[in-house]
Image (tube, rainbow, N blue to C red; front, side, top):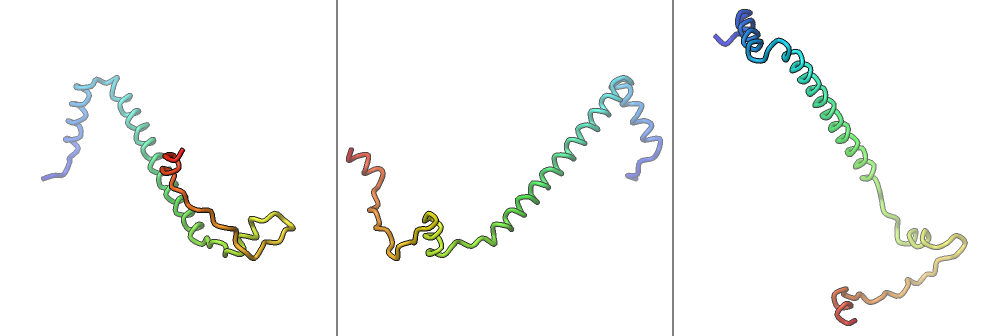
Length: 102
């Protein structure tokens, strides 16, 4: 009951030609083909972007921060030895309070 038969397709083509005209149908088919190509290219690029993000996330998952001693050594210029004592801590000042004081 729901199957398309060849005469159904022929009637559909005749109706389309009567509605849109023979000159507009090739242009409409061409623009439909271009649109489908654009959609296909965009979906492919979105999938590629997802793969790139997954690869970057995998690369960052293995990152381990440096131990505190290595961080201090990395911050010191070459040839200087890092002191064993930590630098004095500066008091934390609320930015809003600093503005009010001035």
